[in-house]
Length: 236
Image (cartoon, rainbow, N blue to C red; front, side):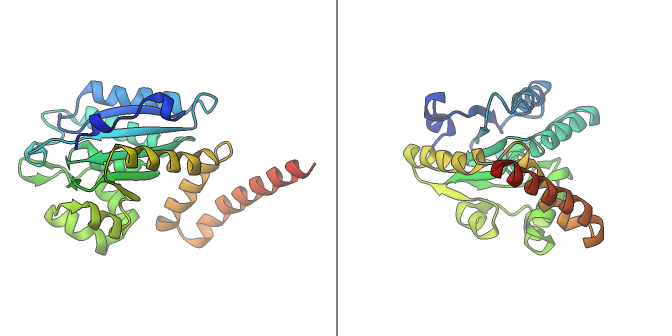
């Protein structure tokens, strides 16, 4: 089942829907597509969430990523992903079929991950070697070294069932209706966040893996103070 066949119309939700072709090498156009989306998401008045539909293709695992590009373009791609990961708005990723290349990067940067039962996800490979991009860092950070080991060291494919067991995927859908329902459910969860609340929660969660209790205390106290002030304002 193709993601393009599952692509909802804007009338089904208030989010921004973007189709990403993961079978192509890294290009300025792809980086620009992600950067423009981040521009929209950083304006909280316009949207509450975005949905990135990742288009897979047969044999995509054998196609080199990022292709014949310079490190400058790779850096721009990583910066765009970081912006997406820190967006004040919610980010949902939807994937199906054979996904490699940017698919893993986008899924790991998303808040909620929906896949079809036929999804096959694998790490990017270039010239027969694992691509050592920031996806490796995110996998170890989000799954832990033990769980990320097979995917990173040996390039093992992840099926829908395995991804759910690993905590990599949040929902498996079987048809268009299932995709739409899952998107709407995710949107309800994400749109309930107040202001930059979602971005704050993300930061606290991710920092907990790499910083000590003492180093994290200030950020957590600031978030607690923000919550208490909001609570007080609502009572007034």
